[in-house]
Amino acid sequence: MTMIKTVGIRAGMLPVAVLALLVTGCGTERAGAGADRATSRTPVATPSTPVESPCPGESPTSAPPAAATTTPAVPPVDHYAENHGFMVPFPLHGKQRCEGLQVVGRVQKALEPLRKRGDFAPESTRTALTGLGYPAGQVSSYQNGSTGVGFLIDAFPLCVEGTMDVGSTKAEAFGGYPDHSGCDRPSGGH
Image 1: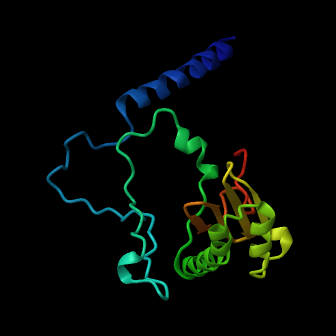
Image 2: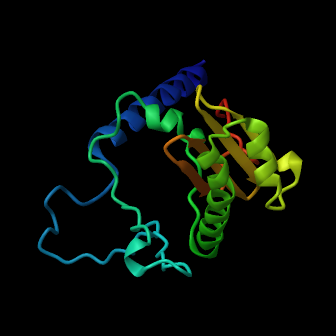
Image 3: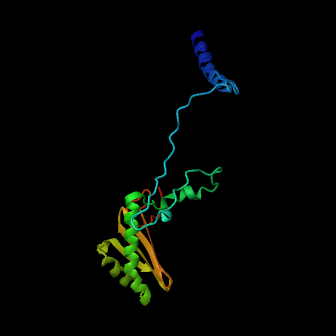
């Protein structure tokens, strides 16, 4: 019976020992100790931002500025950006960005005659875009308001989305979405 009591005491000592270790800390340096001495640290890898060079036909000043790599000092409280990050398209960089700019130019040039005529029928827009060589299965168009049309070219990994109305034809190239293969905007995250 003495054996059982000893085992019980030893088992009860373990949580006390762990608590004592946590309270005292497990390092040997104290706050402020060694503050005068230089420490050698291994550099931490930071995410790199691609350097964008101008594409053919683009002036050096029109290349988009590199995205800032700083993080906000205070994280957002509502986590909106975190929860909706799956809906933010990937930007294009380097050669893909140049290809995207060329496609956007071709799309705008193909749709401009329709815009000038006031032809905002989704069928006309789709016909103009398939005339650029995209298969019908990769092009979708839809009515966007009463005087406009929206379109999407799904040539993944190069995606082109835009709108056309009385005032302008807008198009943007991007590289798809996170957690989703394809160019259509996902409706739900992971």
